[in-house]
Image 1 (cartoon, rainbow, N blue to C red):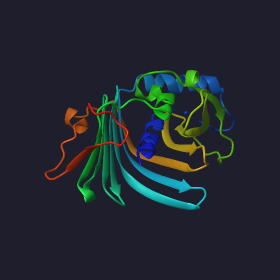
Image 2: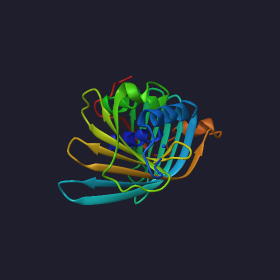
Image 3: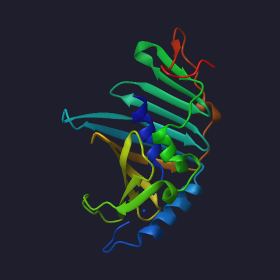
Length: 221
């Protein structure tokens, strides 16, 4: 459940194809500069998670808000409501239908989130990934398709594929490929950057009668 959320985190980073491919490292440089200047991000998303063995795809929809450094709100609205909020070292995962919330007050980057630390205002793409054009996807005008492979051993992520708007060097889609070959695709719409987000967006206020318990394996702070 939680790894699907962080997959979100891979999303805010990248640039195009017209007739010929531009220089890859120049594109990566432009992407890096674009996201270095990004302080926050808001968008609607559609998520399609495909399990390779079961040959099954589940679709979800919702909205994401991200504020550097280290603040994230991930609202799922369809097919079921659920909420993930990260603020500094605290993570909340809330399931309204069960009136259940899990909390981790010592949230740290794991192998997955550490590999994309540049999205949280730390690190550089070229330091953390091997970069290449992704040629398996059909080329579309004004889009770039880039494959990122972690340089360091990762317990979850095999490859991250980014579909980038070539005109503004922003990510339109991201596809996470895990070690088992499962695909986690996010398509973003109504993207907004560097607009004011109320501080309360990243505060979790559980409704009455919500049962709050520590996330299994988390600290007892």
